[in-house]
Structure formats: C-alpha cells, structure tokens
Amino acid sequence: MRLVLDTKVLLVSISSNSKYHWLLQKLLNGDIVICVTNEILAEYEEIVSQHMGRIASDSLLGLLENIENVEFINTYFHFNLISKDPDDNKFVDCAVAGRANYLISHDKH
Image (cartoon, rainbow, N blue to C red; front, side):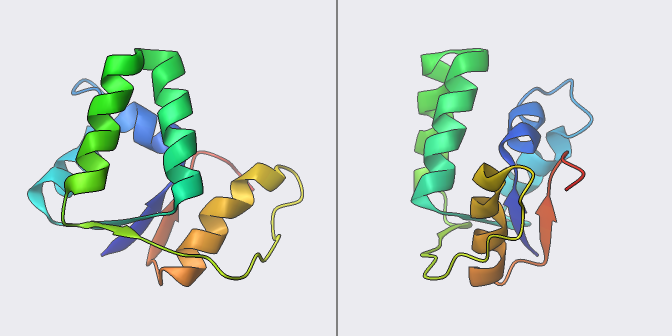
C-alpha cells in the first residue's frame, strides 16, 4: 500500500502512546510505502522540530531518508486543488504523482 502522510498525521504517529502509532510501526516493518517530496520532507523537519525538538526531527528525517520503503517523488504538475490551505497542495500533488492509494490527513479539505 502506498501512502502520503500529512505532517500532522506523521507527527502524532511518532509517540508509542498515540492511536496513530501503528502507521509508524507499519513503515518500520516494511508493510507500507510512504511517498514524499523534498517539500514535504522540509515541512516534516520544521514541524517535528517545533513540537519535539531538533534531535527528534533529525532522527526522523534520517530514518525517512534511509529506509527502503520511503519513495522520493518528483512532482512536475501542480493541481492546486485545495484553495482553503494552498500549502497542503504539495500532499495532493505527491499522492497523484506517486500513485498513492491513500492520502492520510486530519484536515477536512
């Protein structure tokens, strides 16, 4: 299964006490493929660093950059489907370009 994870979803999946921790476990076990772009990785780094500190952010980015089931996607077209929060379009573009089965987000849009 190919997924794109919104930053908030990734952030809450880190804690072993979270009901979303199964996502990180499936990633670590190789059960899912996570699609990312450089833009998404930059946002992951910024938000995880703000909430959990630089060490946690560096560890997570190191994991994502080196694990086999994280696929780096180049997006060549921008669909601009989300007008409420245009910054979230990067996740939609990645999902389409990466042929993801699901885009997991806490956002209603």
